[in-house]
Length: 159
Image 1 (cartoon, rainbow, N blue to C red):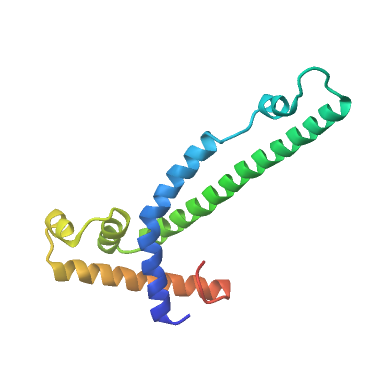
Image 2: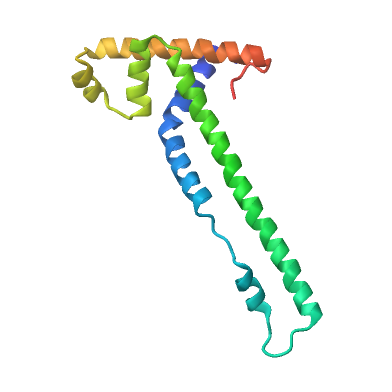
């Protein structure tokens, strides 16, 4: 992958960081509070008044088994998505941690924390050119990391 495309990928990944953090919060909530249908809802929903045949109970049991499978599949899908998102976050945080501290600080505050250039200037007591230089140098270093990892993986892209 050419350097320009890698740089675009790096910037896109960094811009996605805040959204990834929000997804983790949502997925953890869903994992802790999964929506489930109870057994009584399944069986009571098909139980006719009066006599219950063996066939009716067999159907109810099959339906309950299917419901259990679907609930478990949903829980597994949430867990898999949570794992994937947490891996993306971990990768970004690790790569940024490999930068020079001054570069990493600007990248973290700008992309991860969503601070504006004005806020960064006031907080860090730096000129706009200095901030831009640190950000650009950090992005260049991240492009090098992505390029290297892409080469190691043999697919020329870092996914």
